[in-house]
Amino acid sequence: MKKIILHETQVKRLMDNVLNEQVPAIPTPTDDYELHDGRYQVECEFHFSAGEFTTYKNGEIYDIAHGKGIISYGIDIEFQPYGIRNIKIVDVKYPPVIETTLEYLPEGHNSEEDSWFESRIEEPIKIPIDWRKTEIYKWHNNDDRINYIGIGEIVYADIKPDGKGGLIGYVDQIDAREFRGVDDD
Figure 1 (cartoon, rainbow, N blue to C red):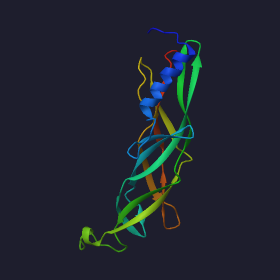
Figure 2 (tube, one colour):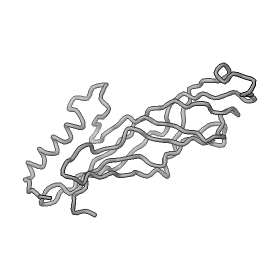
Figure 3 (cartoon, rainbow, N blue to C red):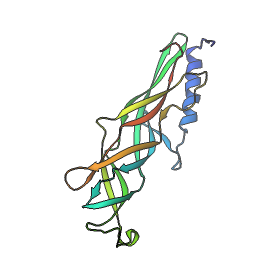
Figure 4 (cartoon, rainbow, N blue to C red):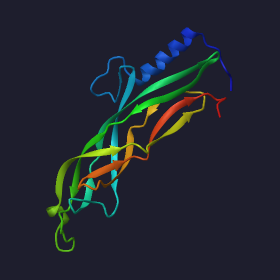
């Protein structure tokens, strides 16, 4: 691997180009990534899964639609005399609640006698997410190219009863891609 020496103005120009590829200068409503107050935002799709015996209003959960939520983060760039050493994701902020639609079977539903399709109940729901044990799984670009740097767009959440008749979501990890210099181990 070859190392190159860049002047400060060259590093700034390089980073402006990298950031412009990720975040358009004039965000439009169709863009997934936006820059707000120096922070990046990505609208993530939340995929929910409930255990086999997870219930809602004493009825079996049939389906949970994907929800959407915004995760924001900062990017920290570590410079060295030879150029950029690392680009890291920092200060990640998560949405406290995700809105989605839940389908469940009513209490006392007998799947052998009743049609699930006719007896299912579809209800909009707000699911609070517990982020306390969430880890950020970091992928590193260790080759000679820098592509996407940021948070992944899909988040997987497990749903459990909250003990008050509602549900709560738990996210074990989110994916992030960073750049790490070759001489870092």
